Image 1 (cartoon, helix red, strand yellow):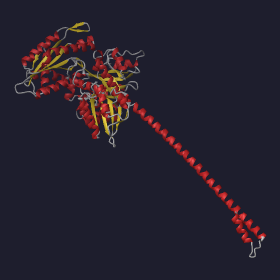
Image 2 (image 1 turned 180 degrees about the vertical axis):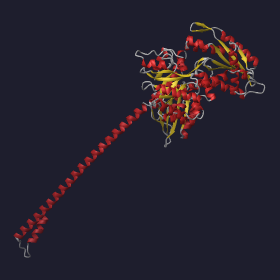
Image 3 (image 1 turned 90 degrees about the vertical axis):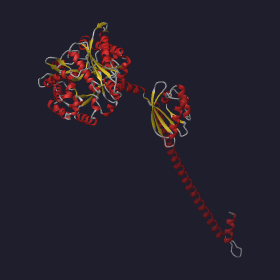
Image 4 (image 1 turned 120 degrees about the vertical axis):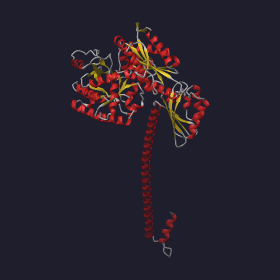
Length: 638
C-alpha cells in the first residue's frame, strides 16, 4: 500500500518538486476505486467458486446417494437370490454336490449328506473328494464293490472332465443314479437321485413279465423262452417232454365257492406240481386252470411216469377255507423233437393230447399221436359255430359298471362280449376271441361290438362313458378308425364318452403303424386306456410311447392283496406313476371290502369288480340307471 502511495505521490509532483494536492487526491481516489473494484471482483469470483463447489458437492452427494441406493438394491437382490438358491438347494429331492478343479467341495445340500449318511462337517467348503469317499465307505453307503476300485473310479472320472451317468447299488441296499457334469473351469457338479423304489418296481414288473402273480410260477412267456433255449441246445440223441395239464371241474368250484377259494386252490395245485417236478424241469401257469411242465432229458417213459405222479398228487384232498375239496386233472404229453421241433408245435400237440383225454374220460393222461390232429374236430366245429354266431344273433354285450372311487358315483360301463351257444351255453371271450383272431372273424365281430356298444351308451345319461376292448388284430386290418368314426356318427354318441381299451400287444408288432392309429383315435376325441397292466411284458416305456388317459391294473394284483405283501407295493407304485403322469388309475377285479378300501387308499380313481357289480345285460343296466332306490350293484350276471 505504501509503495502504491509513493507512486501516486511521484505522479502528483512536478519537476520543481511542487506537489499538486488536487491531482494527488484524484490519483489516490482512483487508486482506491480500482482497489475496491478488484476486491469486489475477487469477492464475486470467490462467491462463484463457492457456489460451484456447493453445487458440485450437492451433485456428488446425490450421486453417492444414488450409487448407495443401487448398491443396497443389488445387495438385496443378491441376498434374495442367494436365499432362493439355498432354499431350492436344500429342498431338492436329489442330492447335489459341486467340486472345484482341485477336487475340493464348493457346495452341497443336506440331501446329499443324508443320502450317504455323512456328518455335517463333510459338507464344509474345501472338503476333499477323497475324504468324502472314504467317509461313505466307512458309513456303508459306497457301492458294493472293492473300496479301492471305487475310489480309483471316482477320482479318474473327476480327472477326465467328461460328462457321465452311472447307477450305483450301495452296500445298504439303496440304488442311486449319479449324473456327473464337467464345468469349464475344470470342476464338476454331480446330481444324486435315489431310485431304489423305481428300481424295485421295474424289477418287480420285469419279474411279473415272466411269472404268474397268483402262483409265483413261470408264465407262458417264460416257458416259451425256456423251450426255445432247449431246442437250441438239443443234440441229435437228446429229447425232452412237455406236459399240458388242465384241472377238471375247476369252474364249478370257482362258481360255487368264489374266486378267492379258486385262487387258493390254484396256489395249492401249483405247490404240488413244484414238489412233483423238483429240479427236473419247469412248471408254468398258462392261464386260468391250465398248467404246463417242461421235463428235461425225458422221453416218453419218463414223461408218462411224471404224469402219473402229478395226477396222484393233485387227486389228494385240498383244504380250501376249512373245506376238503377234491379236484382232478387231465394231462396231455408231447416229446421233442419227435412230436414237434418248435415250441408252438410241441405245445399245440400236447394240447391236442390233452383235449383228447378231456373229451373222453377225465382224470388221466395221454401221449400225443399223429392221428390226433385228424381226429380232433372240436376246434374245427367251434370255428364253424363261431362263423354262424354273429348272423344268428348269438353274440350279445353285457356291461360291467365302473365306479368313481372318490365320489362313489358311476363313471361308466365296460362292454363285455358273450357268446350264447345254442348247445354249449355261455362261452366267454377268452375261449373264442383267440379263434376269431386266427380266422379273421374278429373283423366283423369287433365292428359289431363297437356299433352295438356305442348305440347302447348313447341312451345313457350324460356323461356316463362306455369302454370297449379292441384287439391287436383289429389294428392290423387298417380300418379301425373308419369303423369307430362311422359308429360315432350313427349313434350320435359324443367321442369324449368313449374309451378304447388296448393291451400291450399293440406295441409288440407293427409298433409305428399302431401308434399312428392310436393318435388318430385320440384326434377323434376318444380316450385311450392301457388294459391288463402288470401282466405280460408291461414295459414302463409303453407309458412314454403314448399319452394314455387311463391305466387299468390287472385284477390278479388286486386279488393278491389278500395273500401277497408285495402286491400292495406294486399297486401303490403303479398308482403313483399314473398320478404323476396325469393318468387315471383303475383297479380291476375288486371282490372284497378290504380290497375296495385298500385300492382307494392307494390312490386309484376308479374300480370295477364283482364287489361293485357283476356284468349286467341291457335290462339290468336300464334298471340300474332308472331305479329310484339306491341301486344294488352286486346283481348277478354271467
